[in-house]
Amino acid sequence: MGTENLPERPDPWEKGQGFLWYPHAKIASQKMVTKGKYAKGYPKGAIVHFTAGRRPGLDSMDWGREQGYAFMLIDSEGIIHQAHPLDSWGYHAGDSSWPGLVGSVSDELVGIEISAAGLCEEVTVNGVKRYKAWFHKKESEFFTEDDVRFSEGDHNIKRGWYQTYTVDQELALIDLLVWLKENDKTGQFSYDFVLGHDEVAPNRKNDPGAALSMNMPELRARLKAIG
Figure 1 (cartoon, rainbow, N blue to C red):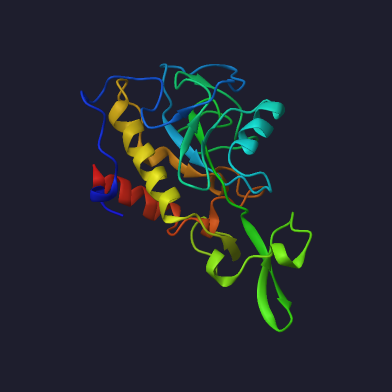
Figure 2 (cartoon, rainbow, N blue to C red):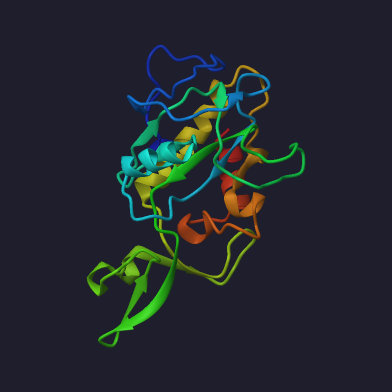
């Protein structure tokens, strides 16, 4: 996943413009609930989540809106959706903390939800291994080995099977994070503050876990290598 796979920037494009809307995003007609402005009008970093629910795509954004949350969403096709401007923050991480940040992280880091079921249970169906998400009701809904990834536990990752992000989703995530830093005119957006929900709330959350093809320190290193 090098820079050759990332989409071209719209023309004209200059870094540090401080745009409040990601140029490749689909902008939601109904905004999500925000609670205030970031201290310098822009996030310091981002939290990577997975939706962990049965709701596909924009249904997850509708659910989040109903719950009073605000986040960006990468749907199952790798399309990014945005429903609030980047100068405003909303709840997405709950009780959380990280060195260098004050209190819970939602008011300093933007949330990026990625459509995926998250941690799954390994089951056997007619002698064949399948993988059951918490919301699966029928055996026909269970995932196959092509849908999941196992981790023994590594850095932020809790041991277990996870429905994986697709290549398109990961490329979209990396492009969005690179753009967020390039676009920043405050100079404060840092790849060191690109964190997993499981890093800032380790006793409560397990996202992104092994849904992502690398652990979070590796993602941060990948971003820094891009520039």
